[in-house]
Length: 96
Image (cartoon, rainbow, N blue to C red; front, side, top):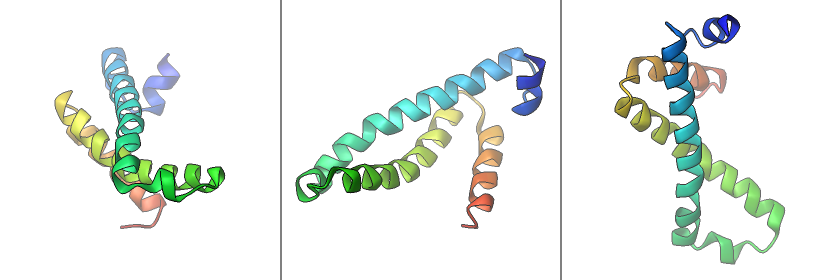
């Protein structure tokens, strides 16, 4: 357990649990929100080739996840922790 606390740079075991909750809720919620967005954009009917549909869905989920992660982090009072994670992700992707 100490390894996970060090890996996630958590302050305590309770902080680690909160981090896991934020990641879990954000991932589930972003996947849930991507379905209605694809329906709204009418992409599921346009793209009949299933592998292309999955790739497009993953591309749509990524920005949704980034937004939802910050919103859920704010709700749990972990904005400063997760904004640093966002910065690290964008640096690795060379977006910013």
